[in-house]
Each structure stands twice: as structure tokens, then as C-alpha cells.
Image 1 (cartoon, each protein chain N blue to C red):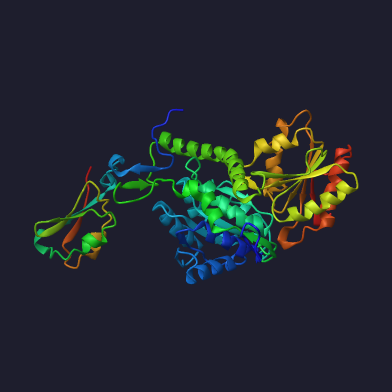
Image 2: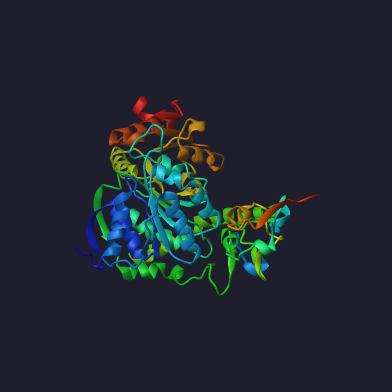
Length: 400
Length: 88
């Protein structure tokens, strides 16, 4: 089936949608090591290369650390690169992960998110990707298979932008999205080429014989080291605005967008807002619609870009709200809460005219379902807090 | 902001690189017994610092960069390299 724009409509699992996003972005070098639930993405890309659909160098590494290290080399030589992983595979990449960011290499990596040990579990969660939040990368979290595909293309546009030059993670929950099949429109190559044109032609520093460079050299003195750290932080700050701008460019070419750093769903006149990140957003939107039909003024904010955290956009949307309920599919050990909630706490002082009640709900850990019933509990509890009732700040939904 | 470089990331032009004389770290130095060297080049291949130099009829170390690790002496099939302790 085709749409009027000539886009193929297919039923694709999340990993395959990601693979199509990569295929259309035309990377030069790919290196993936298999780990559940990401493996079928690497398999799909190998097939594309074998079938001659994708003209890329497919390197088979002996582990995840090598996979990313191979891409560091390829990226330093000026190539467009891709890798993907999950859970312990990601932790095995740790030093290469930091090395990539510090050297400002625009590598794109998909993370089919899985719980991070321990306890052991080959099950969905966000703990693996979220632990990397201070690695200096940009992180996107997708809600649907279509968003995975589109985020992949946006990731290259953002990573390679001359004002940004940072690596990007496109994260989506394993199992729920990696293996769940949904309707996906595959953009045409012409559309994607047009969208990526500004970065496909751009020149960046690379290793070549004509103009020999050194990279990641032992950096002294401390003042120079500080300067690189400062420039890295500054690039992440610029990413926020750039992300919104790129989303608009995307909308102009493809006819639809995602709202940039965050998606606002029925928030305009809402008193109560719930905040989600990842695949549970779809379920939550259905519950929001139901509650709206019952006359409750509730809305939803989906965090699309978690790193850097969309501070200004959130402050703008949340001003004047009475209560906010944050659903976290991850835990922040030291805070006895979730990571998104902890980030949201830092915004409270900036909200006017009054500080809203901020609540946290831990749900969906260890691959468990975030059901409409759980989301309804979140909304009911947040609404009663908005009405002045005293409720616990952090609720572990499946334990209470 | 006072910046020292125009580069965004820790990259530099090779011509402007900071030169670190790693030879300053050395506590022992390799000395080649010229007559025993067979010019096989093993020390040249194995030297981790890449500081072995080809001379007329033998190999020796560039002492600006040689860290004195002793790999050259260890691999030399003719036992032509001695390690001598640096004094002072």
C-alpha cells in the first residue's frame, strides 16, 4: 500500500522501523553486536547490505565495546555511522560511549531499552539508557514505531549539525516497541535526502592525509581541558532550540511533526498534567481522552528529548498548573524516586504564579505493563492532590 | 569567554601539537653494542614508542622519546642491547 506522497505503508516492529530509518539516512559504516532485544535491528541492516539496498560497510565486531570503537574510527575519518545495543551491551560500551561524546563525534546509536542488572532480566525497562544520562550524548525517547523511524532520521540531522556535533541515542523500550508491530509509513528516499541535505554537504574536522590532525590528544593545561568541557556543555544547551527548529523543518517536508523536545497533548486549559516518556504515552493518551470526556481538565506532556532536559519548554507549558504527576519506568536509587521526576523537581522554583504539587509514580519496571488502570490511578491521585488532599510524593504503583 | 583554541573538540593540527618529551620519564637507557647488532630490525618493530632509529650498521634509540621500557633488549636475538641505569 502507498500513501498519496508515494510512501510505502507497512506493518513493522520497532527494530525494523529503526532499520528503515537508518537505511534512508545512508550511513557509511555500521557495526552492531547482537543482544536481545536489539538483535533483529542489526540483522535487518545486514540483510539490506547483502541485498544491495544499502551501500555501507558492515563490520562484525567481537563485542559492543569494539562496535562503538570501530565507529569512532569511522566517524573521525568523516563517515556517517550507526550502531545499536541494549542493557549490558550498553554498559560494556561505557568508556567508548564517553570517548565519543568528549570528541564530539556525531554517531547515532539506537537503544532497545531493557532492564539493567541486577536483578537479571531479559525484559523491558528504561534503566540501561537512563543510567547514561550524564554521558554527554543527546537522548531521544520514542513512543511508537513510526516515531522510532522518524527520530532516527532527525538524529542524523541533529548530530551532524555544525553548531551541535554531538552523538545521539534513539531509545525505545525493548519488547513493547522493539518487537511490537504497528502501522508505519516509510518516507521516500527523496524526502529524506531533502531533509538531510543541510548536513550531508557540511564539512567537519576529519582525519586525512592532506591536512594531518590529531584528535583526543592528552590535553594540558587544565585551562584548555576546561575549555573543551565548556564547549561541550554549551553545545548541549544549543541542542534544545535546534531540536525544535529541526522538528519544524521535518514538518515542512513530511507534513507532520512531533513538537520538538516535548509533545503537548491537551495541556492548554488543563489544571492537572501527567508527564510520560516512552511507550506508555500511547496508553496514557487514551486515558486522558476518557477523563476529558468525564469533564476533568487533564493533559499530558511527553518528554521526547531527555538529554538535554527540555527545561524552558516545560516551564512554559507547566506555568499555572495545579498538579503534575510523573510516570517513571526507571529508578533513581539515591532519590528513592524516578529520574524524570528528579529532573522535574529542579524546575519547580521557576514555575509561576504558584508552585504546583509534583508527584511521582514508579510503574512498568521489570517488563511489567503500564495499563490504562494504572494510568487512571495516576490521574486520580494527581487530581486529588490538586484539590488539596495530602498524598504521598512517590508511589510505587504495583506495590501499593 | 577567553578561549585558547578555535576547535570545538580536543582536535589539533599536527603542526601545532604540543610535543611531550617522554624520554624524561626514563630511569634506564638502552645501549646498543655496535659490533653485535645484526641489523635484523626486531627492536625497530617491537619498540612501543616507535623511537628506534636506523644508524650506519646498527639500531639505536632516540633518547628524547625512549621511556626505557626495555622491550628492545628483551626481543634482540643477538643480545646486542644492554640496559644502563640513568644516574642523577
